[in-house]
Amino acid sequence: MKKTIIILSFFLSTLNFAQIAGAYSINDPISAAMGNVSAANATGTYAVYRNPANLAYMENGSFGLATIFPLPNLSVNVGTDFMTIDEYNYYFGGVEVNGHTVPRELTEEDKQNLKDLFADGGLVYSGTNINYLNMVYKVSDEIGAFGFSISDNVTEVSTFPQGLIELTMDGNIVGRAYDFNDLSLKSSYLRDYTFTYSRDFSDVIHSPFSKLTAGFSVSYVQGLAMGRIDEVKTNIVTNPDNTISIDGHFVGYVALSPDYNIVYDFDSTDYKDSGFNFSPLPTPAGTGFGFDFGFNAELDDYLKIAFAVNNIGSVTWNKNVAKYESNTALLFRDITDQDEVDSLLDEIKMDGTYIDEITTDLPTVMRLGASVQVDKVLDGVPGSLLVAADIIKGFNDEASNSTDMGFGLGVEWRPFSWWPIMTGFAVGNGRPDAAWSLGTGIDTGVFAFTIAAHNFGSIIHGNQAKTINYVMGSRWRF
Image (cartoon, rainbow, N blue to C red):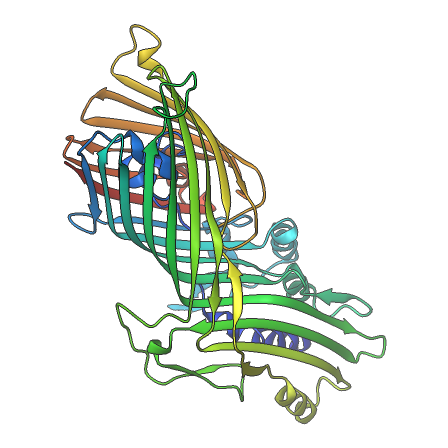
């Protein structure tokens, strides 16, 4: 066990870089409530980040506004693909002994169960999105609609290495190699200033559709913080003579706004906190541009078919950017010799240095969707009933994105015009399980408030849930 603790300490000492983290989120409550469906049905202020073409469906002369008052547009999303809250509390929460919390003594069955949990997983993600200001205005059909929005997005996705769990549970089995090459981290804190334009082109393009709209958004993106691990090649082997060989390679990057007043200490694996300074408008550590475009075609006022691509672009980090690298080859001849252990561990450090710049991609995603206003097709439907579906495909593995294909199906029913009830299902896009979404709110016409859970099953399952997601938002229409 002592050998395990030493090797575990060595590995964790290389992870201090990962203290900088971020998160993933769905950025409007209606999409969250309808199974992440938005290409054809997102409207007004919520169309800006989903499908800019939908702005053109606003009435001429109408104005939409979303701010942090009276209630902010906010989403929070955390979870894993392998462990429930109860399982986390059992294995890592400890037990109470004489009024003190102490580590749980795991049985052999416990150890095997924990290894099984990590066999097909290890992904941990979190995210927060807040929209400070979102204004949209449609001048006329001929001139079109305009929008402007400011949002903060903090995203983080990391993978915990399975080899570390096996090493911790099994100890150093002679002749067996443990690798931590599946360790990964991608995190960022981004602020965007987004300008949007949309117009109905059905007056100049002849087609069977009653409306044919197109739109685009251009975002100026400020990078306020970033951390990522790009390369990990680390192996630990216990040799037949009980010596332990460690061969490690690690490359990571970090960038922080200079206004945060954090000075890197390149003489150790930690950075020095010289007095964190919060500023609502910090100097960015990087900047870039993002581009969205979309189309929406309506047939006979009840069917819409839409297509959108979001977040085409990148951020170049060129202020306060550090590269951390470690290349370690160690041989512990006598693990019980504390002097030897201390001497070798003193040699283990990550070399940090400032670099000119590094570029990271934005999470580019495509949405293909359709919606049907069912009450305009079928007689006898009580109230208003909208059904929508999206196919969603990400083009990179940046934080908050997935190259796995996804599908969402959502419904919005209004038994009364002021009371929307929304639900939906989403599968794919890297989700460990299908997500059942649910949301509701009030809509007076002038003011609307919505609250949603993208994975409502997490509320029902309680501590048996793997994910937690809550989204709320309010907006004004004039």
